[in-house]
Image (tube, rainbow, N blue to C red; front, side, top):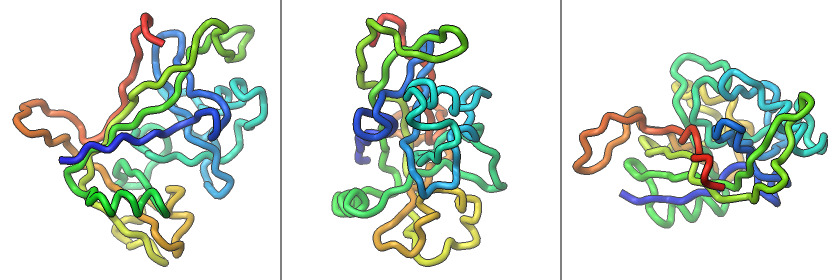
Length: 208
C-alpha cells in the first residue's frame, strides 16, 4: 500500500487565507475557488452550517458567499444533497494525475490530506482570525482508493451520481480521472472497522 500526502484546501496562493479552526476546535476545510464549478460556497454544508459566511468573512468579501468552489476531495455525504449511489471521490488531472500514474497509485493506496489552518473567533456576528494565532499545517483527512475512473468525453451512466463534481465539468480534456473511495478502510493486521474515507473532526486547543 502506498501513502500519498496531498495538500488540499485554502492557503496563501489558493484562496489567499488558511482554512479555519473553529473556537470549539473543529476543522473546517475550505475548498479552493473554481469559476468553472457549479457549486457555490453557500450550498456547501459543514455540520449543518453553510460555508458561505465563513468564506466571505475570512476573505473580507474578496471571495463572496455565492462564488464557485472546487469541492475536491469530496468526502462527506452531508456536504451537499446527493444522488442515489453517491461515493466519496477525489479528482486529479494533468501533471498531478500523470505523477500518480507514474508512481502506480491505484486501488488499495491511501491518500492523506493536509492543509493550512488558523484559529478563528466570532465577534459581532462575523468571523475573524484570532490575532495571536499563527497558521499551522494540519493533517485533516484520508481516502483509500477503491477504483480509478478515467474520464473521457462522457460520464458513464453507472457514475451519473458524480456529474456535479468539478472534474466532471471538464469532460473531454486530456488526462482527467476520479479516484473513488473504498467503503471500508483496509489496513494490514488491523481489526478496526473504519470508513474508507473521512475527516478528523477537531484539533486539540493546545495545538496551533
